[in-house]
Image (cartoon, rainbow, N blue to C red; front, side, top):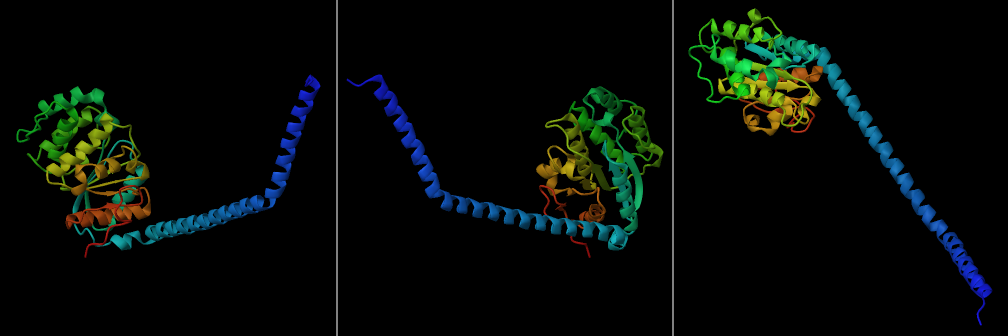
Amino acid sequence: MISFRYHIVSVVAIFLALALGIVVGTTALNGPVTHDLRNQVNSLKDDRSHLSAQITALQGQVDTAGQFATTFGAQLVAGTLPNKQVLVISLPGTPTGMQDGITSSLTSAGAKITGKLDLAAAFTDPSQADSIISLATGAAHPLSVSLPTTSDARIVGAALLAFVLTGHGEATDLKTVLSGFSGLHMITSDPAGIEPATTVVVLGSGSLPKNSYAGEAQTDLVSQLVNKGAKVVVAGDAGSAQGNGVVAMIRDGAAKSTVSTVDNADTAFGQVSTTLAVAGILGSQIGQYGQAKGAQALFPTPVK
């Protein structure tokens, strides 16, 4: 008869054999396996070093390009926009530094800035929709304007603003409409300092939530400017080319075929690109420029 002690001894013997097999197997494989793993680790380290070197080199090129644009930007754009009238519209949240850099570059190109219109967050706030409709249908309503047949305040407000900013209607309509928007706290700049133009640079910054009212309101304004005959360049920072930023939405929408975009306008290089993009669009050259998704080229080809 097989005793309980026999079972215990058998089980212990099995575990000892298993342990011995593991030790022997590990010892036998230790050399080749360890050698192979070490080679893979060394290869990955080499790849990382090469990639790090490439990143450093590319960053150096970007820094050099930025320094070049800062130093010689005015010379690069000089004479590209002789006496061209350009209106600059800043969407809510646009940094002052970007605004100043763009207007300085445009001026260096010979352009005449007809005004700098700064839109407040209230312009893209859905809670202000009724106020926009009341303004568009009230005393500020230009007699000659034909507004879209819709109750959507985003489109109605954009159409009204685009109508007067591009020089349509009577001479007094621009000041009347802008004063109306200013009275609703939707414009932070002085309405008296704005003159119409058919060449427009729209500036934006950062992304917005998906399907947001604000994002749609921004692109509606761009679309309505185009509908009123304006040549439009939309410029912003890298954030504006992501998600639902204004640059990204233009690049992903129907306006892409009629509007040029720049996604690094917060840099000296991008500000030069924006000015060249304005010169390009006046010559029917439309493109998407910068380094973010949807860009077709780093910068515009200078128009001869």
